[in-house]
Length: 135
Image (tube, rainbow, N blue to C red):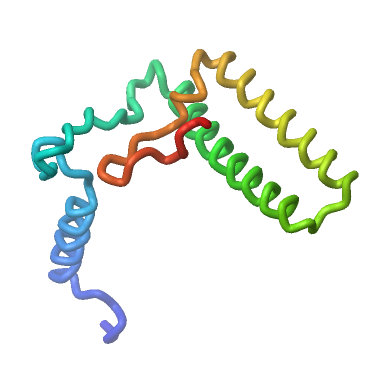
């Protein structure tokens, strides 16, 4: 056995340490989160269901959430570039049309899987929601 190989007795300790770290990363239960006296408690976060009957819909919801996050980030970057004057008028038109088509396609995909755009806004507990509120 070399010095780089884990000793069999330490592997269980390593697994226990990894499990303890993982449990510390889990979100706190709503009753465990202290709220200021002026704040109302937040509702429990929506979680992705692991029901075998809804796995396809849940996977689509997760993928669409990531695509929507990227779409919103691209839209913000495009607006910054337009404000800075980095784009020609033709580029601005093409970019705007592309973002509108992408948004329309997102709405269509949500409708196809019986989701709303608000369903894609995951609640991250104390951090708030993943996506900014709709303007």
